[in-house]
Length: 330
Figure 1 (cartoon, one colour):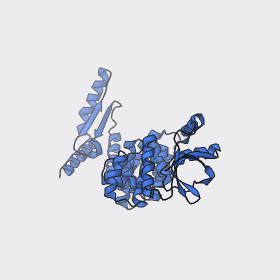
Figure 2 (tube, helix red, strand yellow; figure 1 turned 120 degrees about the horizontal axis):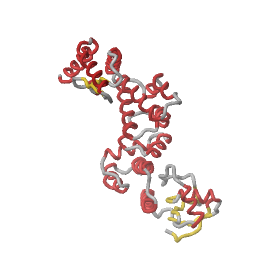
Figure 3 (tube, one colour; figure 1 turned 45 degrees about the horizontal axis):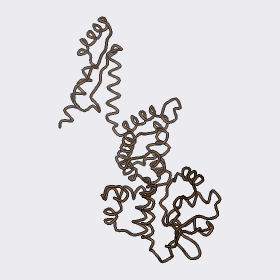
Figure 4 (spheres, one colour; figure 1 turned 45 degrees about the vertical axis):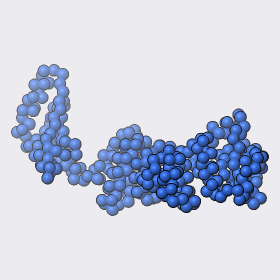
């Protein structure tokens, strides 16, 4: 490697990204630092004919170019001094000791090691995953490789929302068109990790069972009607969309829920008395809840409870719950 020297920016090939793993770099802080203190660490370049190839320092060179600086301090490798893989490893280590990598940059680096540098996956798992502070497992490698091949818009969403690896794996099961169709939905709902996992799982299950595209599920009138309601908050839309997807996923339970609600309305229960089935109609029995503030209200509730066993609607609700309990035990 040659001593530090000043290299004209016009001689540096900005289009060669062989060693780049940048994704959505935050240049503002770097720009402020360079404007205030100048370049603290020289970039790394390699001679390539009469021009220079960037090994490490893509962001610094980009800022220098934006600021109109004509040249930049650099350490320069001779053209045959080191092979591509060696230089890529130098770049990785240099970045790891200075700024680190975000989730997408780790994915890009691993993808290049596999598909460009042809590193054996077993070697990659044992050597490079720990370098990125990742568990040395094949499942982890597959997750990051699938992420590297996703669409830039999806990558941006994953990075900005800090989507977990488990949800990235579910997203990788969808094709490109379906993932792109999901973005407007998820962006408008502002989903947390758990809600995102629930949505993705429901969409995947419905898609597989009905042999229907995910984008077609999202475009159903019921879902679009919820999303178009301007008076709903994102959290309200989330709950309604989730309920709609559950209805699509479990149509039998949806019909049972509608029947139960009709019978409950027909009972004309007092305002402070409510009747509930088991979650998802699993298990037998019904649950009654009531509250009161006066003895008169309490007597009224007791009176209503005493006549419930005689009402046809209540008997039918009880029988449905009992039948479900038997069905689940078989």
